[in-house]
Length: 357
Image (tube, rainbow, N blue to C red; front, side):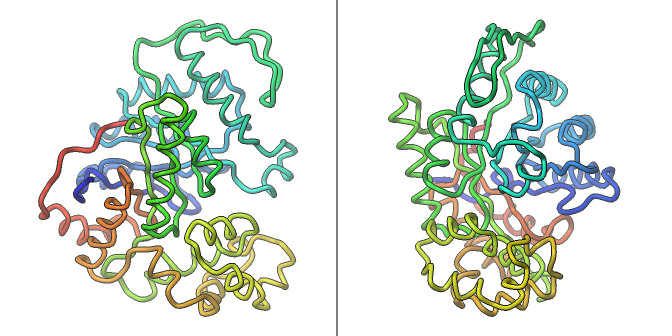
């Protein structure tokens, strides 16, 4: 069990749209100076290019770990991913972590690419590890047909840990069998994290792996000691978007053991119905999303997030660590608005340092 420390926490750089990617460098410097253990990049294929940002952040920081949370796997060939991964691991002096996610079906339709299967994700992790070990890889499967893959130069360093974003039990179990850790979706309750961590570690053990070596990273919607407007933006607007998505929202509700009938009633609100399947977070205003949360059961958002005063937020974050998470990604307010919470946490008793992955 981990005691809450700032080193067990991470935050995003450049959350949302990024009209000036250089701001991400300032975000990373501030995160490191505040004692956070990690920064995370949510890649977007516009001005938030993962390798460019991770490389630049690596040069303006010295200690903080740099992770992808997340990128989608199949827009880059396995050779490109292998080259990118080991190059970034070298440039950041071993601080890079590569996280993948399956994304939504609309994205793959728009890109003209097949939606990644669980088998393909597991195969990708295996192929990357073999390439980083210096092997020549011949492969014919859901990733494609690759007669001969080989990195001409394999760097003399540990490869970057591979993480998988997940919310459902099958994907979490896949992370336990093939990846170095799981990144759990925001809006899960501490009880859901306990169940998820159990699935992860059971799957690792059944695959003959050390269950303690596969890390559980929980993402927590966090809004400490901020205005109601900031709290609504950080928690209500994001949650409204997540729960409106077919498949994703259902998986969150199942993981939390919430009532699916309540989810159906929430989605039956007119603004969602009139979207006719379009993503709510792309087509509704922040104000609309916030107001639609009134159609949820009152206990849903408080039980799946951390809000209120700094002490209350710290206790909620500790509950996620007690539930089985090894570290947390704070998702919600960012930058200076996290300062009072981090200052409060830094004065709490410290535990053993979390193990680096």
